[in-house]
Structure formats: C-alpha cells, structure tokens
Length: 255
Length: 304
Image 1 (tube, one colour):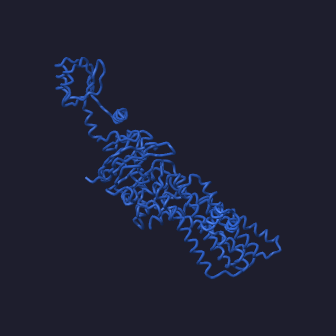
Image 2: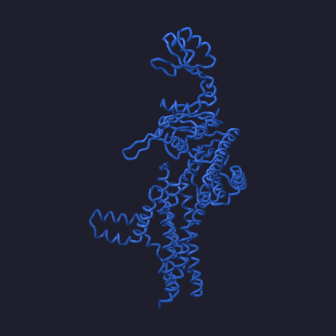
C-alpha cells in the first residue's frame, strides 16, 4: 500500500507543478471571462448561458488534461527510465499502474475543482446566487474523465508514441459519444459489418450516459439511482481497463 | 559465506522482426556477501542487460537468477537491493528532498525514520543545501549524487550501480568510489558495472570481464596483483628438451619461428634459468611482468 501512496504522491506533485496543468487553468480562466461577454450578447437567461458554456469548457479542458496526462505519465516514466528505479524496488507492477492512475485522477480532480470554483464564482458575481446544483453535472464530468484517463493510461503502457495514444484515446471518446449512430448503422449494414458494429456498441462505454448537463441546467428530473448506477458503471470499466494495463505492464520489459 | 547473487546460464536475446541480437549468453556467476564486484566490458557488452535481468526489469530468454536466494522474478528478491541506473533521469518538478522521500517510501520507510534517512543521505552525498531545489535545476553531477542517495534508501545489503562514475567530475568520481569503499567496510555487497578500468582497480575485490554477451573471465584482483611477481623471459634456440623441462616451471605465452616467451613465477625463476642454460637456450630478454587491469582486459577480450 505504501508504494501506491508513494507513486500517487509523486505523480500528483509532478502533475500539479507541470506547465500543462497551469496552462489549462489560465486558458480556461480567459475563456470563462469570455462567457460573461457572450451572455451579455444573448437574450436568453444569463445563468443558463454561463452555466452551459462553463460546463462545456470544464468538460473540454478536463478532456484535454485526461488525454494528455493519461497518455503521458507512464509513457514518460518509461522513456526517461524513471520506471527502472521504481521497479528495482519491491513494487508489484499493478501497484505502479494503480498509483499512477490514482495520482492522475487527483490531478484531474484538482483541475476540475479549480475550474468549478471559477465557474461558480463567475455565476455568483453575475447571477448573485451560488449555483450548487451544477455539482451534479460536475460529478458526472469527473466520472467520464476517470474513464477516459484510464483508457489513456492503458495505451501508455505499450504505445511508443504519445501523440498516437492521445489521438486513439480521443477517437474512442468520440466513438463513445456516437454509439447511437453505431447502433443505427448496424441495422442498415450487412450481416458481418452489422454484427461488428453491434459488438462495438456493446463493448464501448456509452459516454452519452454521462451527459446530464442540459437536464441539470434546466432542472429536469433524473432517476435517484442514476448517480450510484453511473458510479458503478464507471468503476466497472476503469477496473477492467486498468487490469488489462497491469497485465501488459507485467509482461513488458524496459531496455 | 552467503551467496548474494547467483545466475545460471542467464541468456538474453533481443528479437526485432527477423533480427536476433544476443545480448547476454550463458552467464553463470556467483557474488558473495561483502564483495565489491566490478563488472567490466566495452559498451554494448551486455552489462546493463545483465543488471536489468537481476532486477527483473528485463526478463531472461533462458537461464535463472537469484538474489539473496530468492528468484529474481519475485518482488521479494528486491527487498534488500538498491539500484542506480546508467544516466538516471528523475522527476523534474520534485525537489531533491521530495524525490528521496518518494524513494524512501518505495523502500518501505515512513514517519520519522524516513525523514531522518532523507536528511542524512542528503548530507552524505553533499547536496543538503540544494534539497529544496527542483531536480530539473540540478547539474549532471548532482543528479548522479541524488541517484546514489536513492539507491542507499532503506539501507540495502546489495547495491547495484550501473556505470556510476561515467561523466562525473573528479570530485563526483571520488565521492562515488569512497562510497563504494565505505559500503564494503560496512559489510555491504556492491555490484557495479563500468568501462572505466581504473575505477575497478581502485575499489573492486573481484572482476568479471564481459565481452559480446559472454562472461570471459572472473578473477580476484588480489590474486592478479600477486602475479605481478611473474617474469617474462624471451628465449632463442628453445628445443623440445627445454619445453619439457619448462612445462612445470613456466607458462608459454608466445611462440614464433625463432623465439618463445615464457611467463615464470618468481619462486621458479632460478630453476627455470638453470633449465634454459642446461638445455642450450639463449635468453634474449628478461623483464619483470606488471600486468595492469587494462592488459588483462585486452588480453582476455583478445582471447574472446
């Protein structure tokens, strides 16, 4: 357990001090300020406009952090040879993967927390009330990013190109949000292609499941079991993906 | 005496498509407790590959290895081991102190024991004043020092150092060699690879010469030093009688059409000279042989 905590702590410290982390925050802050300008130009309710744009920005910047950091952390340890001093200790490789992933989730969590505080602060100034109800949407954004980050970590255990890993992870994110199209196409395709598309639609996590932004902003009802179901759904995928990543790490050699 | 490292026919073959590169072949070795073992060989000889197999960073294609009697495939084999890789790179945004804390936790330390160890090691390797500085601002020498410090975290009984002095300034080199001496005096086992033969001569007890993946020779430096009392004698007119007489007294090292060269131990010198005179040989040169490690190394890889 101590090795997981050590790797978690090292990853978190390294991550929150990186240029990427601060770059995302500064850029997001500038865009948040621009949402205020956009809301001024619109006839619609300012609160809804800022909340909608703000959540979309948080989701987008969180995605950038999850994809880039997710595909980078283990990859960089391997490239720099730092992994060798870790594995030269009595550390099981699955614990290394777990520590890295938890560290990554902490970085994404801190990132999300700061961005959320910015959004809630902007809304407080503009609307004059704390829009705490948005936390529900932030919760699902965090879970979705957890899933995306695990896919990034999975690719970083064997890929020789971080760019390629990032692109594939991003591709899977897009597919995950297009499963309806896959299912529809499966119905119209031939036997083999139809089966393939249907299988993909079953295997891939349905990322639309996480998108509750509109419902939250407009105060539409959500089933009470939704929040626990989506947590279990995410945990199931993340554990399975990290299990595969650990299997790959177990077999990998580091020259 | 306890055997700290044992390898049996350790072999590593790298495969890349149809290409097969034999990095290490049939390496069998034993390192005993308290030894400082210098593992020498030119670049690409397979030194780092061997070390990485001992730490399970690379897996052998065939053969086996044990550290403290535990199969190296088990993480338990690394419980009492500290390792410094070649050209180490650590986490850029961690400070020296934070990095050592990280390494200490991986070595199983915590609480005040960890903090004390971090402080003492920072002082020991001479970078205590730079402990708050981020590692990306450290010079190469300082990185090597922090690398040594992390290898010593947890007070390991076996310290494996891969090219620990390469690229270091004279002060850094002295620190590293002094450290190895001090580890030996505390009964630790040190296994280090290098291509700097002078370093090995200074600190090693035993030496292994690796060339093209094969362990050609393992010898004790003390024994080799005793051989410095050997004499090299070049002779003309050496007939078959002389060869028969010399067989038990000397080692034939060179032979051409006119001359032969023998290596004779000091104890046998007079008896051998009598034999040469008695059998009609003519001594051309007689020189006291002082073989340094470089000569032994070159001679060995020449044989290889």
